[in-house]
Length: 429
Image (cartoon, rainbow, N blue to C red; front, side, top):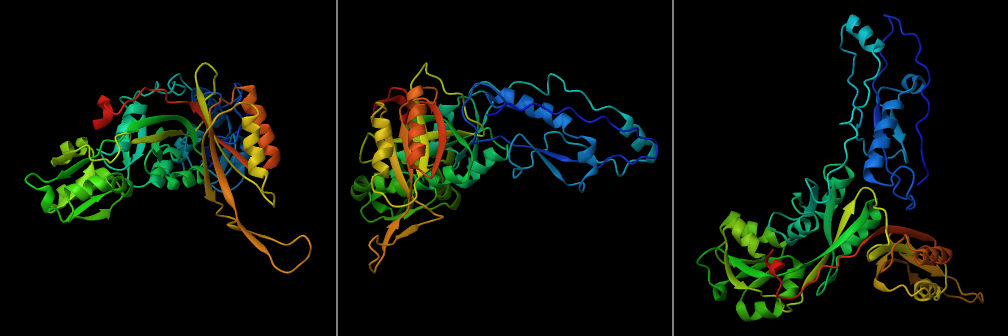
């Protein structure tokens, strides 16, 4: 990111007692999410970025800006103009004050910044507000607690809401599932990663331990319906056939939400697939424990933030990117993958998603003959084991950029190296 210094404010004119107080202005502070990962300039760390924004916001109200536009005009600081109005420096409107008070307020110098205005952010995992999708008792809540111990978990009814909660400063982080060892990729979150400008700052892998829950006194062989998230239903398909052969399976938004729905509506003939914590929270009974068809059932979650972290080389890092290419050429993907292979960079994930803005590409024959060929256009998501602080990773992306029409780094972050086994104690989280 280029270093940005606050401009020297223009001298204030001599404001007499009859001069009307300047209209209030809302200040927007925007982080440049497309900035490279450098260790200098605004954005090298969260506290540096917040401090710089506060200083800029306090000096941005020059006379020329106050005189131009209407009272709802907005100044963009440190980046794009289109952003969420954060009102970092609220200015009370003086239109309703008496004339004497207006004149006195106009002559008062701006209040200086104090040490509390530049207070450092909370320590990692301490007093952070972390958004997750679902209701209390969901596996995403357990993942948020594992990623940020002692955090304040904020439930969101949709993945989109969790993204927006971080963007609008309602939450500090979001912890969302990206793939499951049995069910595969969570495609919705891959699409949202591209639509929003949040950064992946970490990952956490959480074992999934499914239980069959129902109201106390319910028998498994008498169940008429089993509700849960679609992936939970598919992960317990064979076991459900044995436990409740007559039960109809119905998909809902999340696992803990299914348990909450049964308890709230007193459904006697319905069971839910969820965690044992959900049973405790909603007063349900565990009819069967560990009903997943495969004990090695793990979900990988990513931690999202408004600004990226500084990549390092003192521990294993992973980098996530997304790219697209234009025009014909079946060897483009091969060239991109070769850029990593030649530098001995291990790829851990490659996922293709339809290109929404250009789903189909029409290719005319080179010899001028009749007929056309239609090819689907894709975006490719790639995870590789290297830090953006390493020269080999920087050179690999420089080569990839030559073959692609679009390239974006979603994040360079520490890998989750926590040891895990199917019999670990955190399965019941």
